[in-house]
Image (cartoon, rainbow, N blue to C red; front, side, top):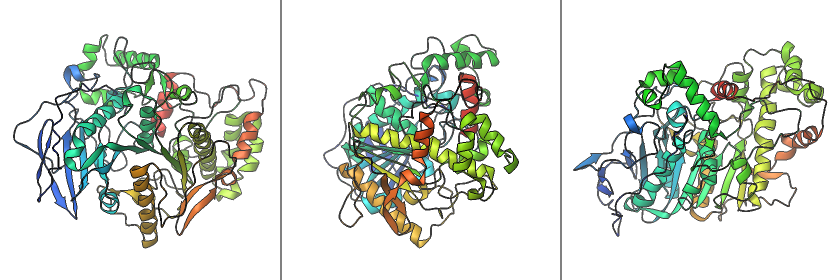
Length: 543
């Protein structure tokens, strides 16, 4: 599902007291909309299901978020709010409830002007919820105040229609509304509204990228963490092959208008009012286009253009990937691909480059599995290669700290496709930073120790904009003028320099990208030129 971008309407005067109202068990905290009371457990306080915007229903469906109606008495903030509309995926429940714009706050018992981390969940902009992530370890170990956020998804967060202001960007606006809520209210929970880090993984990192490029987010956060999404893809203009997962991060708002009209036709509507009257299940069943739109007030221009030009919010950035990002996605894009079909699949996608790719990624190096080999190609071509380019581009303007998560013993994410070895797969670092709700996976002692070190780095970065601190291996900044291949490797008992270049064949892809062949060698395989094709590929790859 797509996220709903909308600039939040400013509300009321600040009601943040001189001292946080967190003394005593389950003490009520005053927000600018009313009092909330949470729970105290294991030396942290949790406040769940706090509305940061009005329910986006009726005329507010596909509308910028507006403030919630203030309440009298004390709001029971002891359980999560509803998930935004979504199908059941990966063991996570479905939802048909549009009243879903809630956030959760977790704070140390004695917090006072503590650094704040705002976490945006992943899920392909189609599913997930902030309440899936339990940040107690980060809060207890590092003293952070952590806020996790719901935002609109799929056809509720990223639908466009002719004449609809900010169509295709409502989910991004929701996130900005949550950040403004944090600016106004977090001091009452012991947080520092002037020391906010915006962080996320996968679609959450995609969202962080959008906020970096959005003028409306300026000043709402002072640092950023983007896990497993390079904010600026490599340019393939004039090249004769494409990434395997050939889906851009951002698309023109006109594409969303066309997609919205297509959805309206499918549902028997000619007007936006008619669409607003359709029940949630109908919109969930319709094809979604979960890519934020640019060319509106939220994202005036494509971040792929804005970032290289320096037109983005200049804050320190911590960013990186996992060692084997592609192992999750390859079975989704190449289901049932066997060894006998490997050469043909490479030829279809890479044309005259296929022989070189097959030599660099031989089946025998991947246990004879064509899908595993495709996963290795995707890791290098679709994630690591653009991540290096993005690191260097950002580093010309801001401090950048790059990492790679290397623990190939990490527990597999739920419902990992059978027949493929997960290794350090997409999302595998999340359990090292968070406990996941309704998850009974236990880390080993060594994995928990690595998680503690990662939390120390993340907390230090959120506090100062630099992850380095005494007692941790030194983590150098990315130097855009330096050709060193090293990033900070995060592995069991081995934290330090990791040669990203050679381990991911980046020189090979540099060379292949510099070659040209005649047009028509492999037709349009791998090329995506229409919203409908993008919708199909994005849906297959979303988690």
